[in-house]
Image (cartoon, rainbow, N blue to C red; front, side):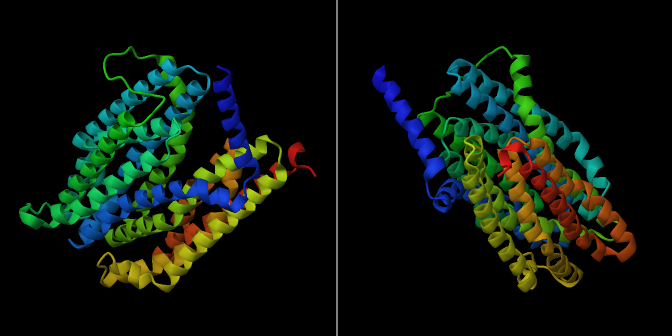
Length: 460
Protein backbone atom coordinates (compact mmCIF):
# COMPACT_ATOMS: atom_id res chain seq x y z
CA UNK A 1 0.00 0.00 0.00
CA UNK A 2 2.81 2.39 0.84
CA UNK A 3 4.40 1.73 -2.57
CA UNK A 4 1.11 2.53 -4.30
CA UNK A 5 0.75 5.75 -2.31
CA UNK A 6 4.34 6.72 -3.07
CA UNK A 7 3.81 6.05 -6.80
CA UNK A 8 0.65 8.19 -6.84
CA UNK A 9 2.40 10.92 -4.89
CA UNK A 10 5.29 10.88 -7.35
CA UNK A 11 2.91 11.17 -10.33
CA UNK A 12 1.11 14.09 -8.69
CA UNK A 13 4.42 15.86 -8.02
CA UNK A 14 5.55 15.22 -11.61
CA UNK A 15 2.30 16.67 -12.93
CA UNK A 16 2.67 19.72 -10.73
CA UNK A 17 6.25 20.19 -11.87
CA UNK A 18 5.15 19.97 -15.48
CA UNK A 19 2.33 22.51 -15.16
CA UNK A 20 4.17 24.82 -12.81
CA UNK A 21 7.79 24.61 -13.94
CA UNK A 22 8.15 23.28 -17.51
CA UNK A 23 9.24 25.77 -20.21
CA UNK A 24 6.00 27.48 -21.16
CA UNK A 25 6.18 27.40 -24.95
CA UNK A 26 7.12 23.72 -25.03
CA UNK A 27 4.40 22.96 -22.47
CA UNK A 28 1.70 24.77 -24.48
CA UNK A 29 2.69 23.05 -27.70
CA UNK A 30 2.92 19.57 -26.15
CA UNK A 31 -0.51 19.89 -24.56
CA UNK A 32 -2.19 21.66 -27.47
CA UNK A 33 -1.03 19.85 -30.62
CA UNK A 34 -3.32 16.77 -30.23
CA UNK A 35 -6.32 19.07 -29.73
CA UNK A 36 -5.31 21.26 -32.66
CA UNK A 37 -4.98 18.21 -34.90
CA UNK A 38 -8.38 16.89 -33.80
CA UNK A 39 -9.99 20.24 -34.56
CA UNK A 40 -8.43 20.30 -38.01
CA UNK A 41 -9.85 16.84 -38.64
CA UNK A 42 -13.25 18.17 -37.59
CA UNK A 43 -12.80 21.00 -40.08
CA UNK A 44 -12.27 18.35 -42.77
CA UNK A 45 -15.74 17.02 -42.02
CA UNK A 46 -17.10 20.51 -42.58
CA UNK A 47 -15.41 21.21 -45.91
CA UNK A 48 -14.96 17.96 -47.85
CA UNK A 49 -18.66 17.55 -48.57
CA UNK A 50 -18.85 21.14 -49.83
CA UNK A 51 -15.91 20.78 -52.22
CA UNK A 52 -17.26 17.65 -53.89
CA UNK A 53 -20.88 18.79 -53.81
CA UNK A 54 -19.92 22.06 -55.51
CA UNK A 55 -19.11 20.03 -58.62
CA UNK A 56 -22.83 19.21 -58.88
CA UNK A 57 -23.72 22.88 -59.23
CA UNK A 58 -24.40 26.01 -57.22
CA UNK A 59 -27.79 24.71 -56.10
CA UNK A 60 -26.10 21.82 -54.26
CA UNK A 61 -23.71 24.17 -52.46
CA UNK A 62 -26.65 26.35 -51.43
CA UNK A 63 -28.45 23.24 -50.13
CA UNK A 64 -25.56 22.47 -47.76
CA UNK A 65 -25.66 26.05 -46.48
CA UNK A 66 -29.40 25.83 -45.82
CA UNK A 67 -29.07 22.56 -43.90
CA UNK A 68 -25.89 23.54 -42.02
CA UNK A 69 -27.65 25.23 -39.03
CA UNK A 70 -29.56 22.01 -38.28
CA UNK A 71 -26.45 19.89 -38.77
CA UNK A 72 -24.44 22.22 -36.54
CA UNK A 73 -27.19 22.18 -33.89
CA UNK A 74 -27.05 18.38 -33.88
CA UNK A 75 -23.30 18.44 -33.27
CA UNK A 76 -23.74 21.16 -30.62
CA UNK A 77 -26.20 19.00 -28.67
CA UNK A 78 -23.83 16.02 -28.92
CA UNK A 79 -20.73 17.99 -27.86
CA UNK A 80 -22.49 19.94 -25.11
CA UNK A 81 -23.94 16.81 -23.52
CA UNK A 82 -20.60 15.01 -23.73
CA UNK A 83 -18.85 17.90 -21.97
CA UNK A 84 -21.26 17.51 -19.05
CA UNK A 85 -20.70 13.76 -19.13
CA UNK A 86 -16.92 14.15 -19.08
CA UNK A 87 -17.09 16.54 -16.14
CA UNK A 88 -19.24 14.16 -14.10
CA UNK A 89 -17.12 11.09 -14.88
CA UNK A 90 -13.91 12.95 -14.01
CA UNK A 91 -15.32 14.06 -10.68
CA UNK A 92 -16.56 10.59 -9.79
CA UNK A 93 -13.23 9.01 -10.70
CA UNK A 94 -11.42 11.61 -8.61
CA UNK A 95 -13.67 10.72 -5.70
CA UNK A 96 -12.86 7.00 -6.22
CA UNK A 97 -16.55 6.29 -6.97
CA UNK A 98 -15.90 4.13 -10.02
CA UNK A 99 -19.32 2.47 -10.12
CA UNK A 100 -20.97 5.88 -10.24
CA UNK A 101 -18.61 6.89 -13.04
CA UNK A 102 -19.72 3.81 -15.00
CA UNK A 103 -23.34 4.72 -14.29
CA UNK A 104 -22.71 8.25 -15.57
CA UNK A 105 -21.25 6.82 -18.80
CA UNK A 106 -24.33 4.63 -19.28
CA UNK A 107 -26.59 7.63 -18.71
CA UNK A 108 -24.55 9.55 -21.28
CA UNK A 109 -25.31 6.92 -23.91
CA UNK A 110 -28.98 6.99 -22.91
CA UNK A 111 -29.05 10.74 -23.46
CA UNK A 112 -27.29 10.31 -26.80
CA UNK A 113 -30.02 7.93 -27.93
CA UNK A 114 -32.73 10.28 -26.64
CA UNK A 115 -31.28 13.25 -28.50
CA UNK A 116 -31.00 11.13 -31.64
CA UNK A 117 -34.72 10.35 -31.47
CA UNK A 118 -35.42 14.10 -31.54
CA UNK A 119 -33.31 14.63 -34.65
CA UNK A 120 -34.70 11.44 -36.20
CA UNK A 121 -38.19 12.86 -35.83
CA UNK A 122 -37.03 16.20 -37.25
CA UNK A 123 -35.34 14.53 -40.21
CA UNK A 124 -38.51 12.62 -41.09
CA UNK A 125 -41.21 15.21 -40.37
CA UNK A 126 -39.60 18.64 -39.98
CA UNK A 127 -36.89 18.95 -42.62
CA UNK A 128 -39.21 19.67 -45.55
CA UNK A 129 -40.90 22.50 -43.65
CA UNK A 130 -37.53 23.96 -42.60
CA UNK A 131 -35.99 23.85 -46.07
CA UNK A 132 -39.12 25.37 -47.56
CA UNK A 133 -38.39 28.55 -45.57
CA UNK A 134 -35.14 29.17 -47.47
CA UNK A 135 -35.25 27.31 -50.80
CA UNK A 136 -36.26 29.51 -53.75
CA UNK A 137 -36.50 26.69 -56.32
CA UNK A 138 -37.70 23.08 -56.44
CA UNK A 139 -34.21 21.84 -57.27
CA UNK A 140 -32.74 23.59 -54.23
CA UNK A 141 -35.62 22.40 -52.04
CA UNK A 142 -35.26 18.75 -53.06
CA UNK A 143 -31.48 18.79 -52.57
CA UNK A 144 -31.76 20.43 -49.13
CA UNK A 145 -34.39 17.97 -47.89
CA UNK A 146 -32.44 14.99 -49.22
CA UNK A 147 -29.16 15.93 -47.54
CA UNK A 148 -30.72 17.21 -44.31
CA UNK A 149 -32.98 14.21 -43.76
CA UNK A 150 -30.16 11.71 -44.17
CA UNK A 151 -27.72 13.44 -41.77
CA UNK A 152 -30.46 13.87 -39.14
CA UNK A 153 -31.71 10.30 -39.39
CA UNK A 154 -28.13 9.01 -39.19
CA UNK A 155 -27.06 11.33 -36.36
CA UNK A 156 -27.07 8.49 -33.81
CA UNK A 157 -23.42 7.80 -34.60
CA UNK A 158 -22.16 11.35 -34.00
CA UNK A 159 -24.22 11.53 -30.79
CA UNK A 160 -22.78 8.28 -29.43
CA UNK A 161 -19.23 8.91 -30.71
CA UNK A 162 -19.05 12.24 -28.85
CA UNK A 163 -19.99 10.44 -25.63
CA UNK A 164 -17.33 7.77 -26.19
CA UNK A 165 -14.76 10.48 -26.92
CA UNK A 166 -15.43 12.29 -23.66
CA UNK A 167 -15.57 9.06 -21.64
CA UNK A 168 -12.07 8.21 -22.87
CA UNK A 169 -10.77 11.74 -22.28
CA UNK A 170 -12.21 11.72 -18.76
CA UNK A 171 -10.12 8.58 -18.16
CA UNK A 172 -6.98 10.34 -19.39
CA UNK A 173 -6.82 8.93 -22.94
CA UNK A 174 -6.35 11.89 -25.31
CA UNK A 175 -4.95 10.03 -28.33
CA UNK A 176 -7.69 7.45 -28.97
CA UNK A 177 -10.39 10.06 -29.75
CA UNK A 178 -8.01 11.75 -32.18
CA UNK A 179 -7.40 8.51 -34.08
CA UNK A 180 -11.11 7.66 -34.10
CA UNK A 181 -11.97 11.03 -35.59
CA UNK A 182 -9.14 10.75 -38.12
CA UNK A 183 -10.40 7.34 -39.26
CA UNK A 184 -13.91 8.71 -39.78
CA UNK A 185 -12.65 11.72 -41.71
CA UNK A 186 -10.52 9.51 -43.97
CA UNK A 187 -13.49 7.28 -44.79
CA UNK A 188 -15.64 10.34 -45.47
CA UNK A 189 -13.05 11.79 -47.87
CA UNK A 190 -12.72 8.48 -49.73
CA UNK A 191 -16.45 7.78 -49.99
CA UNK A 192 -17.55 11.28 -51.01
CA UNK A 193 -16.55 11.13 -54.70
CA UNK A 194 -17.49 7.45 -54.97
CA UNK A 195 -21.01 7.93 -53.65
CA UNK A 196 -21.67 11.35 -55.19
CA UNK A 197 -20.50 10.58 -58.74
CA UNK A 198 -20.83 6.79 -58.85
CA UNK A 199 -17.25 5.60 -59.28
CA UNK A 200 -16.21 1.91 -59.28
CA UNK A 201 -19.67 0.75 -60.31
CA UNK A 202 -21.39 2.45 -57.40
CA UNK A 203 -24.65 4.27 -58.29
CA UNK A 204 -24.31 8.07 -58.53
CA UNK A 205 -26.37 9.42 -55.63
CA UNK A 206 -25.58 13.11 -56.01
CA UNK A 207 -25.99 15.21 -52.90
CA UNK A 208 -27.55 12.26 -51.08
CA UNK A 209 -24.24 10.45 -51.58
CA UNK A 210 -22.44 13.21 -49.69
CA UNK A 211 -24.87 12.79 -46.80
CA UNK A 212 -24.41 9.01 -46.75
CA UNK A 213 -20.61 9.42 -46.82
CA UNK A 214 -20.81 11.76 -43.83
CA UNK A 215 -22.97 9.35 -41.82
CA UNK A 216 -20.76 6.36 -42.70
CA UNK A 217 -17.67 8.36 -41.64
CA UNK A 218 -19.33 9.13 -38.32
CA UNK A 219 -20.21 5.45 -37.94
CA UNK A 220 -16.57 4.49 -38.50
CA UNK A 221 -15.48 6.95 -35.79
CA UNK A 222 -18.04 5.39 -33.48
CA UNK A 223 -16.80 1.85 -34.20
CA UNK A 224 -13.12 2.79 -33.76
CA UNK A 225 -13.98 4.53 -30.46
CA UNK A 226 -15.67 1.32 -29.31
CA UNK A 227 -12.57 -0.70 -30.17
CA UNK A 228 -10.29 1.66 -28.26
CA UNK A 229 -12.73 1.68 -25.36
CA UNK A 230 -12.57 -2.06 -24.86
CA UNK A 231 -8.99 -2.82 -25.89
CA UNK A 232 -7.25 -0.09 -23.95
CA UNK A 233 -6.83 0.20 -20.23
CA UNK A 234 -9.68 2.47 -19.21
CA UNK A 235 -10.94 3.24 -15.72
CA UNK A 236 -14.53 3.26 -17.05
CA UNK A 237 -15.75 0.18 -18.87
CA UNK A 238 -19.28 0.37 -20.24
CA UNK A 239 -21.68 -2.43 -19.44
CA UNK A 240 -24.42 -2.72 -22.03
CA UNK A 241 -27.68 -3.97 -20.67
CA UNK A 242 -30.52 -2.87 -18.49
CA UNK A 243 -29.96 -0.22 -15.89
CA UNK A 244 -32.28 2.04 -13.97
CA UNK A 245 -32.16 5.67 -15.12
CA UNK A 246 -31.44 8.12 -12.31
CA UNK A 247 -32.82 11.63 -12.72
CA UNK A 248 -30.15 13.01 -10.39
CA UNK A 249 -27.36 11.68 -12.62
CA UNK A 250 -29.07 13.15 -15.68
CA UNK A 251 -29.42 16.50 -13.88
CA UNK A 252 -25.72 16.39 -12.96
CA UNK A 253 -24.79 15.86 -16.62
CA UNK A 254 -27.01 18.70 -17.82
CA UNK A 255 -25.79 21.05 -15.08
CA UNK A 256 -22.49 21.39 -16.93
CA UNK A 257 -23.62 20.17 -20.34
CA UNK A 258 -26.53 22.56 -20.91
CA UNK A 259 -24.49 25.80 -20.74
CA UNK A 260 -21.89 24.20 -23.02
CA UNK A 261 -24.67 23.11 -25.37
CA UNK A 262 -26.02 26.67 -25.49
CA UNK A 263 -22.57 28.10 -26.25
CA UNK A 264 -22.07 25.53 -29.00
CA UNK A 265 -25.54 26.19 -30.45
CA UNK A 266 -25.08 29.95 -30.72
CA UNK A 267 -23.31 29.48 -34.05
CA UNK A 268 -26.30 27.52 -35.38
CA UNK A 269 -28.73 30.30 -34.40
CA UNK A 270 -26.47 32.92 -35.98
CA UNK A 271 -26.17 30.96 -39.23
CA UNK A 272 -29.93 30.48 -39.33
CA UNK A 273 -30.55 34.21 -38.81
CA UNK A 274 -27.99 35.27 -41.40
CA UNK A 275 -29.34 32.76 -43.93
CA UNK A 276 -32.75 34.36 -43.46
CA UNK A 277 -31.22 37.77 -44.27
CA UNK A 278 -29.09 36.48 -47.15
CA UNK A 279 -31.90 34.63 -48.92
CA UNK A 280 -33.53 38.04 -49.38
CA UNK A 281 -30.71 38.76 -51.83
CA UNK A 282 -30.29 35.36 -53.52
CA UNK A 283 -29.54 31.69 -52.94
CA UNK A 284 -26.04 32.51 -54.25
CA UNK A 285 -25.46 34.72 -51.20
CA UNK A 286 -26.47 31.81 -48.96
CA UNK A 287 -24.04 29.54 -50.81
CA UNK A 288 -21.21 32.07 -50.41
CA UNK A 289 -21.80 32.32 -46.66
CA UNK A 290 -21.68 28.53 -46.42
CA UNK A 291 -18.37 28.48 -48.29
CA UNK A 292 -16.93 31.13 -45.97
CA UNK A 293 -18.06 29.24 -42.88
CA UNK A 294 -16.36 26.06 -44.04
CA UNK A 295 -13.12 27.82 -45.02
CA UNK A 296 -12.81 29.85 -41.83
CA UNK A 297 -12.97 26.67 -39.78
CA UNK A 298 -9.43 25.87 -40.93
CA UNK A 299 -8.30 29.14 -39.32
CA UNK A 300 -10.41 29.10 -36.15
CA UNK A 301 -10.26 25.39 -35.33
CA UNK A 302 -6.50 25.29 -34.53
CA UNK A 303 -6.99 28.18 -32.10
CA UNK A 304 -9.89 26.39 -30.40
CA UNK A 305 -7.74 23.25 -30.29
CA UNK A 306 -4.92 25.16 -28.64
CA UNK A 307 -7.36 26.23 -25.94
CA UNK A 308 -7.74 22.60 -24.87
CA UNK A 309 -4.08 22.62 -23.85
CA UNK A 310 -3.89 26.25 -22.75
CA UNK A 311 -6.82 26.18 -20.34
CA UNK A 312 -5.46 23.57 -17.86
CA UNK A 313 -2.11 25.38 -17.83
CA UNK A 314 -3.79 28.67 -17.01
CA UNK A 315 -6.13 27.02 -14.52
CA UNK A 316 -3.30 25.30 -12.66
CA UNK A 317 -1.20 28.43 -12.32
CA UNK A 318 -4.24 30.52 -11.42
CA UNK A 319 -5.01 28.07 -8.63
CA UNK A 320 -1.36 28.08 -7.54
CA UNK A 321 -1.46 31.91 -7.53
CA UNK A 322 1.55 31.94 -9.82
CA UNK A 323 0.38 35.06 -11.63
CA UNK A 324 3.66 35.63 -13.42
CA UNK A 325 3.47 32.21 -15.05
CA UNK A 326 -0.24 32.63 -15.74
CA UNK A 327 0.43 35.87 -17.62
CA UNK A 328 3.25 34.18 -19.51
CA UNK A 329 0.80 31.53 -20.70
CA UNK A 330 -1.69 34.24 -21.67
CA UNK A 331 0.89 36.21 -23.66
CA UNK A 332 2.25 33.17 -25.50
CA UNK A 333 -1.29 32.00 -26.21
CA UNK A 334 -2.13 35.40 -27.70
CA UNK A 335 1.04 35.39 -29.83
CA UNK A 336 0.35 31.90 -31.22
CA UNK A 337 -3.31 32.68 -31.86
CA UNK A 338 -2.43 35.98 -33.54
CA UNK A 339 0.11 34.25 -35.79
CA UNK A 340 -2.47 31.65 -36.83
CA UNK A 341 -5.30 34.14 -37.37
CA UNK A 342 -3.17 36.77 -39.08
CA UNK A 343 -1.80 34.10 -41.38
CA UNK A 344 -5.36 33.04 -42.15
CA UNK A 345 -6.36 36.63 -42.85
CA UNK A 346 -3.47 37.04 -45.30
CA UNK A 347 -4.43 33.83 -47.11
CA UNK A 348 -8.02 35.03 -47.42
CA UNK A 349 -6.90 38.41 -48.72
CA UNK A 350 -4.13 37.28 -51.07
CA UNK A 351 -5.69 34.12 -52.48
CA UNK A 352 -9.50 34.50 -52.38
CA UNK A 353 -9.77 33.44 -56.03
CA UNK A 354 -7.87 30.23 -55.30
CA UNK A 355 -10.05 29.48 -52.28
CA UNK A 356 -13.28 30.01 -54.20
CA UNK A 357 -11.85 27.90 -57.02
CA UNK A 358 -11.89 24.88 -54.69
CA UNK A 359 -15.68 25.01 -54.97
CA UNK A 360 -15.82 25.40 -58.77
CA UNK A 361 -17.17 28.92 -58.28
CA UNK A 362 -18.02 30.92 -61.39
CA UNK A 363 -19.90 34.09 -62.25
CA UNK A 364 -21.83 35.65 -59.38
CA UNK A 365 -20.82 32.94 -56.91
CA UNK A 366 -17.15 33.68 -57.62
CA UNK A 367 -17.37 37.49 -57.51
CA UNK A 368 -19.54 37.63 -54.39
CA UNK A 369 -17.38 34.99 -52.70
CA UNK A 370 -14.15 36.90 -53.28
CA UNK A 371 -15.65 40.05 -51.72
CA UNK A 372 -16.98 38.03 -48.78
CA UNK A 373 -13.63 36.37 -47.99
CA UNK A 374 -11.56 39.55 -48.28
CA UNK A 375 -14.00 41.56 -46.14
CA UNK A 376 -14.90 39.21 -43.28
CA UNK A 377 -11.29 38.14 -42.78
CA UNK A 378 -10.50 41.57 -41.33
CA UNK A 379 -12.04 40.25 -38.12
CA UNK A 380 -9.57 37.37 -37.61
CA UNK A 381 -6.90 39.15 -35.46
CA UNK A 382 -9.53 40.69 -33.17
CA UNK A 383 -11.18 37.28 -32.83
CA UNK A 384 -7.83 35.75 -31.78
CA UNK A 385 -7.54 38.17 -28.86
CA UNK A 386 -11.15 37.64 -27.75
CA UNK A 387 -10.85 33.84 -27.86
CA UNK A 388 -7.66 33.68 -25.79
CA UNK A 389 -8.92 36.20 -23.23
CA UNK A 390 -12.10 34.11 -22.95
CA UNK A 391 -9.89 31.10 -22.23
CA UNK A 392 -8.40 33.03 -19.32
CA UNK A 393 -11.91 33.77 -18.05
CA UNK A 394 -12.79 30.07 -18.11
CA UNK A 395 -9.51 29.03 -16.48
CA UNK A 396 -10.02 31.53 -13.65
CA UNK A 397 -13.60 30.43 -13.01
CA UNK A 398 -15.23 33.43 -14.69
CA UNK A 399 -17.45 31.33 -16.94
CA UNK A 400 -20.06 34.07 -17.11
CA UNK A 401 -17.48 36.43 -18.62
CA UNK A 402 -16.61 33.85 -21.26
CA UNK A 403 -20.27 33.19 -22.06
CA UNK A 404 -20.93 36.93 -22.38
CA UNK A 405 -18.06 37.41 -24.82
CA UNK A 406 -19.10 34.37 -26.83
CA UNK A 407 -22.69 35.57 -27.11
CA UNK A 408 -21.50 39.04 -28.06
CA UNK A 409 -19.13 37.68 -30.73
CA UNK A 410 -21.48 35.24 -32.35
CA UNK A 411 -25.01 36.57 -31.92
CA UNK A 412 -25.89 39.78 -30.10
CA UNK A 413 -23.88 42.17 -32.29
CA UNK A 414 -23.41 40.42 -35.62
CA UNK A 415 -27.05 39.61 -36.40
CA UNK A 416 -28.53 43.09 -35.76
CA UNK A 417 -25.51 44.67 -37.49
CA UNK A 418 -25.98 42.42 -40.51
CA UNK A 419 -29.65 43.34 -40.76
CA UNK A 420 -29.07 47.09 -40.41
CA UNK A 421 -26.02 47.17 -42.71
CA UNK A 422 -27.85 45.10 -45.34
CA UNK A 423 -30.52 47.80 -45.47
CA UNK A 424 -27.95 50.58 -45.70
CA UNK A 425 -25.21 49.06 -47.87
CA UNK A 426 -26.72 45.98 -49.49
CA UNK A 427 -25.03 42.58 -49.49
CA UNK A 428 -21.57 43.99 -48.70
CA UNK A 429 -22.97 45.39 -45.46
CA UNK A 430 -23.59 41.84 -44.19
CA UNK A 431 -19.93 40.93 -44.65
CA UNK A 432 -18.81 44.08 -42.81
CA UNK A 433 -21.01 43.13 -39.84
CA UNK A 434 -18.45 40.51 -38.78
CA UNK A 435 -15.45 42.86 -38.32
CA UNK A 436 -17.71 45.32 -36.47
CA UNK A 437 -19.00 42.58 -34.17
CA UNK A 438 -15.48 41.36 -33.39
CA UNK A 439 -14.29 44.87 -32.51
CA UNK A 440 -17.22 45.40 -30.14
CA UNK A 441 -16.65 41.98 -28.56
CA UNK A 442 -12.94 42.67 -28.18
CA UNK A 443 -13.73 45.92 -26.39
CA UNK A 444 -16.02 44.02 -23.99
CA UNK A 445 -13.31 41.39 -23.48
CA UNK A 446 -10.72 44.03 -22.59
CA UNK A 447 -13.11 45.73 -20.17
CA UNK A 448 -13.80 42.42 -18.41
CA UNK A 449 -10.09 41.57 -18.44
CA UNK A 450 -9.34 44.89 -16.78
CA UNK A 451 -11.96 44.13 -14.16
CA UNK A 452 -10.35 40.75 -13.53
CA UNK A 453 -6.92 42.35 -13.10
CA UNK A 454 -8.32 44.74 -10.53
CA UNK A 455 -9.45 41.90 -8.28
CA UNK A 456 -7.45 41.18 -5.15
CA UNK A 457 -5.59 38.26 -6.69
CA UNK A 458 -4.26 40.28 -9.61
CA UNK A 459 -3.03 43.24 -7.59
CA UNK A 460 0.69 43.77 -7.70
